[in-house]
Image 1: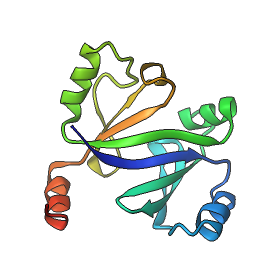
Image 2: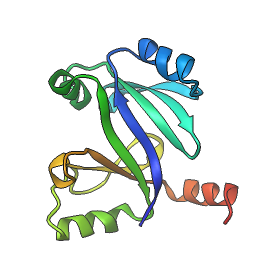
Image 3: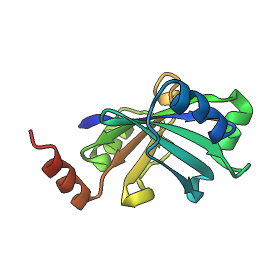
Length: 146
C-alpha cells in the first residue's frame, strides 16, 4: 500500500543557484543539505507539509543523476512514494510485468529500503519506492496518531 508522496526530486546543476529560486524567492524552508555518496549527489531537502522537494546536484559524473542531466538537462528527476511493504509491492509490479530498475530493494540512507521503477513501466516517470525501517515506522506513527 502506498502511504504518501515522500518527495519530488529535481536535478539541478548547482544547489546554491537553485536555492536562490526555491528557498529565497519561492519561500520554501531549507531543512538541510547532505551528500549521498552512494548515488553521487548532494541533496537539499525543502519540506512542504508531509513531503519534501529535493534538489539533486550531481557530484559524480558517472552517476545516474549526472547521466540523466547530461541527456535531459535540469528538471524533475523522480517522484518518491513511501510504501508500507516494499517487497510485496515489488512482487505485485513484477507479476503485472512492470519494468523495474531494482528487482529487489536496496538499503538507502537511514536504513530505508528503496527501489526504482523504470520510466518505461510508468508512462515516462522515474518512480522511487521506499519503506522506513521498523523502528522509524513506529516512531512516525507515534508522532502522528490517527
